[in-house]
Image 1 (cartoon, chains in turn purple, cyan):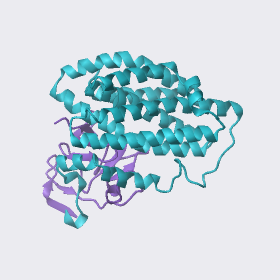
Image 2 (image 1 turned 30 degrees about the horizontal axis):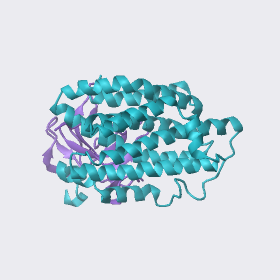
Image 3 (image 1 turned 30 degrees about the vertical axis):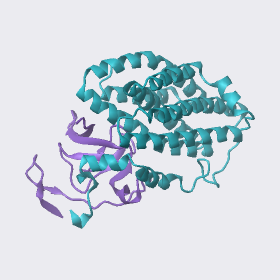
Image 4 (image 1 turned 90 degrees about the horizontal axis):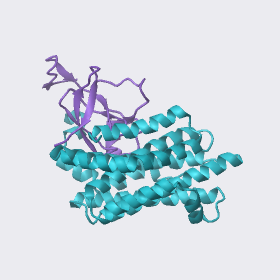
Length: 98
Length: 261
């Protein structure tokens, strides 16, 4: 399903939406588990709705495709993060300072 | 969005921060990985016999971990009084509970390994550098120096512990399932502690750049102590040298993120 209200500013296309499933991440309250999964190391390919927490190395997942400027939360380490495009062109998350 | 359920990432920052610093959040989170554990491991986790050298090395490593957990317990408890707000006080109370649990299960593991007088063994085996680090940390806590104490405890100490426990847990997966299980449980708690330290200081440093310089001096004083102690521990775990390098790198990434040189 596409959400027309939320556009991808980089391509002007609607953002892709994702159903999240429980991947067995047991470090947060049950109802929030689907928003996280373990990272399998550098060979682990992240989906467009996923970004790695730089603090605790857990994969953060969202219902929608992530883009630079989005805010995400890592509940495992309680971090507030902003999505940015890293030097290698990949999406990364950095600590919010405000 | 309703079709997919509420999106956690749409919460406003204040709501998120209040929730994750609460005792209720802590309770709901730890239930996921501690509910079926007794002293950090499942009742049916097999005990594997260790040869004498491995057992002796493990005892030394656990003694060092006990010192780390004791200082974090005393530090977290002592800082509640000087914490800047209610949410932070509550979070520190959950951290103190975590650290108390870690100390208890590590001491219990030492008893299982046949150590008769755990307290004396810790005094005898743990690195003097860790005891020195402990004195520095308590001095910051006693002085009510929130920034220095949180940096020493939740950034330096917790980052090194997190990385060491992770490396050690990988190494014990096949050889010592009981120690592996209790380390994995501790690591899950440590994520909250390192995250708290980095988030707390990142915002303070962003508001006052001079704080980074102040904390750089703390780092200069404490880095040699903590690196020396954890290098000794890694040596005893038998972890390959490249894994030890990873341990150091994880800590360096944390301080780099904060801009503390």
